Amino acid sequence: MSTNTASVTQSTPTAPSTPSIANPAPLGLLGFGMTTCLLNIHNAGLIPLSIVIVAMGFGLGGAAQIIAGIMEFKKNNTFGATAFTAYGFFWWSLILIWMNPFKGIEAADPKSMGFYLGLWCVFTLFMFIGTLKHNRASQVVFGSLTVLFFLLSLANFTGAESIHTIAGYVGIFCGVSAIYNSVGQVLNQEFKKTVLPL
Image 1: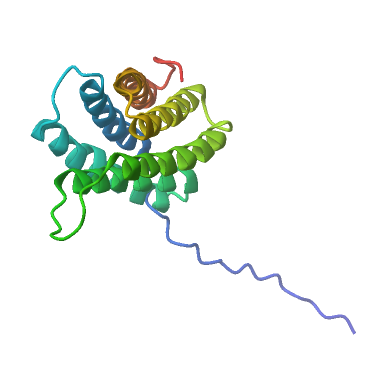
Image 2: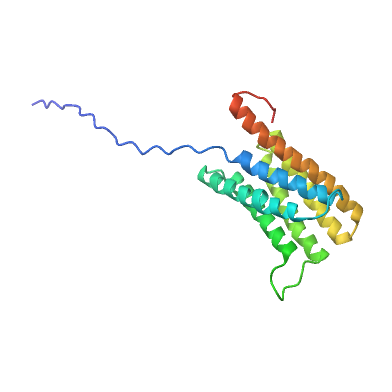
C-alpha cells in the first residue's frame, strides 16, 4: 500500500529587520580629536586653561564620545564601545578634577595626577594593541595617545615643565590624527571611494 505525501511548503516567519544605524566612529573620533587638540595647545603653553577647554571637554569630548560609545554598543562593536565611552567619561572626570566641586575633598596634587594619567596610559596601551587589527590611522591615534598619557604622567611625577610642553605637542599631533581619521571616514563614505587613505 503506497502512501502519497504531498509536500507542503510552510512559510517561515521572518524576523523584523533591524534598521541600520550610521557609523558612530567619526563622531567619537571628532569629539576626541578636537578636544585633545585644544587641551594640548594649552599643555604646549600656547593658551591658558579657560572655560573654552572646559566647555569643549564637557560637550564634544565628553557627551559626543559617550553617545558614540552607546551607538557602538548597538552595533556590537566592543572595541569602539569601550574606547568612546571610556574616553568620554575621562573628559568628564578631568573636568571634575579641575573644578573640584566637593567640599572636604582634597584638590588633585601632582602625585595623584601622575597615577591618574598613568592608569589611562596602561588602558590606552592595551587599546593600542587592539588597533593592530585595525587600520593604520587608528594605530597612529592610539599609539600617540599612549605616548601622550605617559609623558603627562611623567611630567606630574617629576615636575618637569619641559616634559609637559613636549607632551602638549604630542597631544596636538594625536588630536589632529584623530580628526583626520574622523573626516577620512566621513568623506570616504560620502564619495564611496578613498578620498583620504586610512
